[in-house]
Amino acid sequence: MAGIDLVPLVDEGLGNSAYLVDLGDGRALVVDVSRDLRAVHAAAARRGLTVAFAADTHLHADFLSGAHQLGATGGTRVLASAAGDREYPHTGLRDGDEVDLGGLRLRALMTPGHTHEHLCYLLLDGEKEVGVFTGGSLLVGSAARTDLISPERTEALTRAQYASLRRLAALPGEVAVWPTHGAGSFCSAPPGAERTSTIARERATNPLLAARDEDAFVDQLLGSLGSYPPYFRRLGEVNRLGPPLLDQDPVLPALTVDTVRAQLAEGAALIDVRALARFAAEHVPGAVSIPLRPVFASWLGWLAPADRPLIIVRDQDQDVDEIVWQAMKIGYDNLIGELDGGLAAWTAAELAVAATALTGPDGVGNVRVLDIRQRPEYLAGHLPGAIHIELGALPGRVDDLPREATVVMCGHGERAMGAASLLERAGHRQLTVLEGGPDDWAHATGRTLETGA
Image 1: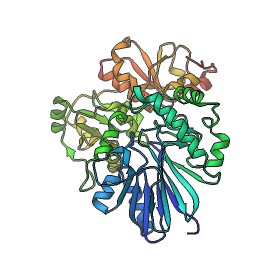
Image 2 (image 1 turned 180 degrees about the vertical axis):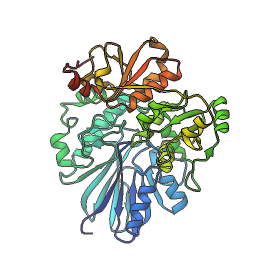
Image 3 (image 1 turned 45 degrees about the vertical axis):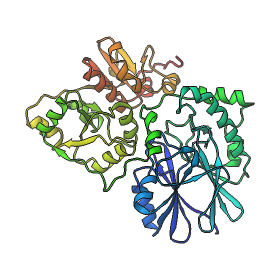
């Protein structure tokens, strides 16, 4: 086969890439596809392809795999690590096993580290090693985190990751590197902007491959890891069992104001996906602000309960399918509907609304500042004296904060509004959200940011 027709399917929000490979005979291979199969189906349809093979590199923690759905409804042959003990029909592969794709071949390479059962897939054209699907092993400029299985196994997995990366680095330099995790993925150590690479480039530039020995590698990788959403701790097992199959595309039923009020009284949570300014102007008291944007799924999985019914408030021009699929791909099947008519229906019923003040950099003044960005962001530069609590940790810390005037900030404002909504729900008042980030404040005031802890 002259050349490989490979199509990366990038999920910018989760920071992951799936791949579709045209096998040249009307069939396709897909690798590490999520439960949201819309992009896969569209890419295959444009080329007139049937998805014949779906390979998973590991039991994903950050999204539900779409391989189970493809196998059950499309006759797709599912390929996965035999060590994963998946409980649905699949071909379990061990180190060195090969699968004939009809001209091309896949060779399984056991590469534990990110997970205990991790497989990479080496794509061969004849005897030529073309590229390797590295999943959560070798990434562009990095390697995936090793602390998702259990604290007791983290060091052993990190040492396994060291060996796995060196095994991959021994491949020919021209072999392409096609990882799953990339920029924006919480499964990654801090990655670069590019999503694919080559073995030669990684040998030359990946700092983890430059570690002087195994102990230095362990210190370097573990020292680079930050926090991750709590839903990561349960999706691996869901993927092992097989994500629930869908017999049709999910929908979001319209709920009347009275139904929404009754559901809230019984413990449902309200998720407002409208833009920052729209939420600030008025919103249902107690609603959590998670604006609809590419990273919606990550913050839904961080801030919204997975064990309670969720109701959506949106503007009519916001894509309801995008809301539902972003939730479903991380296992949030607990969306029970949306407020019919949006906030306008709530206000028409003469029900109470709340508002949250916004300010520009000049309005920060001398009040307390709460910075809710990720730790590396905070260390790189923050307002002098700012308190730091990551947004993901805030739900468990709302009672630790004094109830006094506070400006809440992040990098742009969306995460800060989410934080303010959590604090308001816990009874905090006198909250203001900064539109913009620390660089905007420094530019507007002429003052210098602090760095470090």
